[in-house]
Length: 276
Length: 326
Image (cartoon, rainbow over all chains, first blue to last red; front, side, top):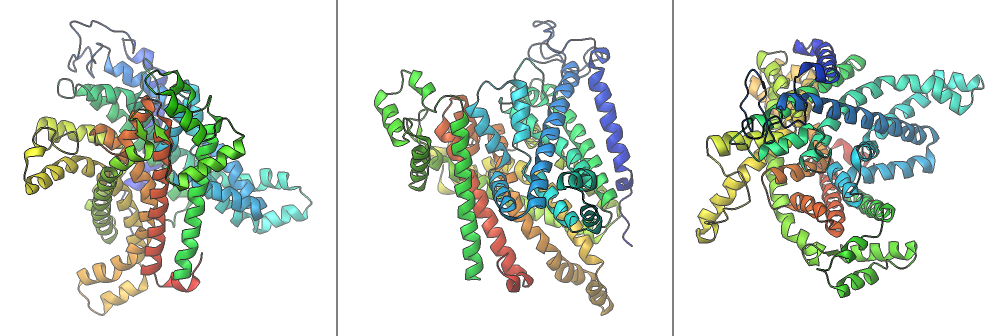
């Protein structure tokens, strides 16, 4: 028997707990901080104020409260990632089921498209779309993120469906005279819940990283809407004078993504204990 | 072997063709044609715009445009960079070397560090060191690569002043340096971006390598090796690690897209004059030819990387030789 590090047994709990805390923090942001995220408190006396009791995370170039911006940024980053992942997992599942169930040329042509989609490094693909549709807005951004990241999900789901298709309970459903749609919805999809939940948890973490990266490049969430990536970019300009502007939003990203990674990894081990 | 490589090569060419098609479809779906925006600018000569319009057949039916587009690509014509006033390929060609250098350095750090850490963990499962490294790798895995870069700039460039934070060479002194001095200057400039990129990848490699090593050390032949009295070191390195490295070879192929995505961000953090930085700058200037060109070239790099990984796997794992064409 191989003993696993003890933290791994608790990681689902820690991950889910952290995510809960972050969501509550994001939801209650206006109650948790006395400052509005975009109010320029006092450009003269409070520009780049160091962390203190009044401003635990300090203030930025525009004398805005960094803590408040980090909290409101959580709302933006987590909800963009969650919706985009919902989109991509739905699309990936539909494509994966279509490819795995129908097989034949449908399968091979869908999988070739997936191969091509995976061959373009994701950020280059997103950058291309952002370049071609310059006035996207936040909803457009969510769509782009969701529509460009379903490729690996569809592969995972396809593999699952392929192995499910030949199982006896599917055969039984067919023998009972169930149509393909009913068989898929009632008998195949419930078995996809495990891989889908892992994909969602890990996917949200990765999506937060991608959105932060895009916003860092100035191509994601547009100011004045606060987003973590964009705050890091602003902070980098004043790294020597006011390191807190770039450091705290980064810590927020790390904790959030860590929480989703813990949850996703833990779920995977739970569903597939022999995998590790 | 030749048949296998041939089949993979054909597959690779097919993928690149599909990538080009995706790019073309995106260009078609986008509002206006790529030249309408440029045409508003007074800085660009009408002749160049008209020549580009003819070259890509923008006034002709979509099918013809598609044919011309593919034809141009095959001839290496990615379009005209209106920002740099020269063919997009020339702009990219000047930068691609820097990106490959950064990616190669990152790849080396990623595998050297990741394999060492993961293999050690796999050999000492449940130890305190294993737990510590696991927490560390999961944290790095969850860290945005650009923020890691920013923190390194803060600590090693701004704080300790050990290494330069921007560029590929020193803008002032590089011209006067000796050959050795130039090499050193390049190396110090490469250090921070490469370490940033490499560390992010090393976290993934370590997680992968740990699992692979764990899988192997519980197998019978390892027990046999121990039972016949081999020193532990030989058991772990010669017997266990050799087998446990096989799955990591597949990671080599998977690492390419992630690594290239990473270069876009890392190049921006450190103002590294590579393809990623070029793309980001091109977007701001609506320089489509460069943006689509880098995307296609990045895809080609990925496909070539995958091809290498496939062939490498084929070479190191004798079991795949019989099964041949997958």
